[in-house]
Amino acid sequence: MMKFTGEILVEDMNEAERARAEVVESVLADVRAAAREVDANAQFHMPHVRQFSKAGLLGLIIPTQYGGLGGGLRDLAAACFSLGSACPSTALAYFFHCSAASRGLLAIEALEAGLFSDEEAPQVRQFAEQILYGMGRDGLWFANFASESVKSEKAAVTISTEARKVDGGYILNGVKSFGTGTGVADKYLVTASLEGYDTAEGLCTFFVDRDGEGVRQRAPWDAIGMRGSSSGGIVLENYFVPEEMSLAIPGAFTRCMQMSRGSFVGNQMAAVCGYAGAANSAYQSVLKHLTEKKFADTGKPIGSAPYQQELIGKMMVDLQTALLWLRRQLQLESSEPPIAPKEEVVKQWRLCKGVVAESGFSIATNALKASGTSGTMGDAARYLRELTMGIVQAFPAERGRLMAAQMEVEGAEQNQFGVGDKAAAQQA
Image 1 (cartoon, rainbow, N blue to C red):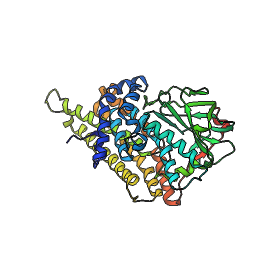
Image 2 (image 1 turned 120 degrees about the vertical axis):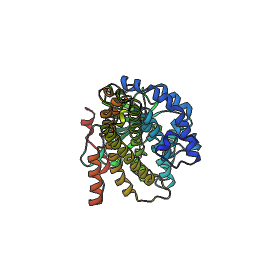
Image 3 (image 1 turned 135 degrees about the horizontal axis):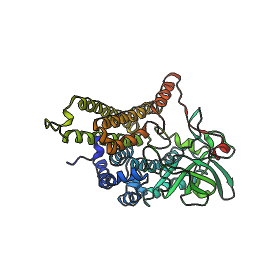
Image 4 (image 1 turned 30 degrees about the vertical axis):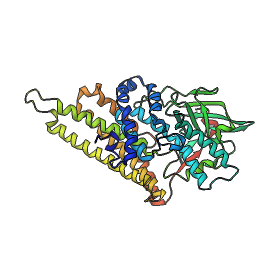
């Protein structure tokens, strides 16, 4: 029986999961073929959008009643690992598309849990179904914009984009930095804070048209790594959102977040699976090189030398470390019934992200060392650039360990979301 790339991470797939993994596998050759061009040009490969949509992958984790493939976190983790092994930038963009599903899935769960009143329920359901049908039945690519460059000591993500109520809808003003999928997605989902609120109770979600009046790209994305993820972000200047394209009920955001195992962003650990997939490819690529290339005098593989074998051994340890931490985190976040309370799942995630990111970066560093000078012009250098992003994206390992230690000692986590100085943010 053929083994799919995703099974390197998720070893115990059931029949339905393997069927979905086969769909992912069907696009990998084309994704891999475009990876060098994506990195060199710092541009997302737009044909992927149509290919993924046609295959049904834009609805991978959308329930079948909404036209999706009916997958869950295990499927998404395996998919991001697989895509990361082919093109890390594409894997990251795909993850952020899939993260938009949480805005619909958690809202439906919150409805079923009775967290909304009878008066609120129709608006919540209508908004959620726009997302779920859009991703599942209609095959649309979504971007999920929460991150901003504004920082707060007391919150992991600070939202300064403001939503002001006007007749028939809302006016949005603000800057969304590092928004993966900028200019790629068919629709943007934007988190903003209602005017007059200074806590997470005022956070709301809005649909924004990519080419709408008052929307522009923030800056070209010319980063050290993940160069083809189109993460430049957007600027919103007096952008009008109709009432029916908004979920602006005070407290709706926090009520929905209660339904998640971890972050409201949605299945956050799957993003790091993309980094692990890239690390696996970096290792396999250099191992092939060290096995096939021979010493001129002895004819032995270069990889038989003590220096290279020391590096190979270190890469083996780092790769298995990343996979083991991810498998444990996946178990914590997907097991039914849950095997740990939410605070323990979140604490473990704070540690897991850093371990996986640093292990991947170490693999890339050692792969470049083992490749020698010629590696600086090839895939070894590309993987190093891609995996550099992992040690800073979302939060670095040091911050994750600090947050986990604070939870362990003080019994409380840093707030996930906060509201910042909106006027200052709009000038950023």
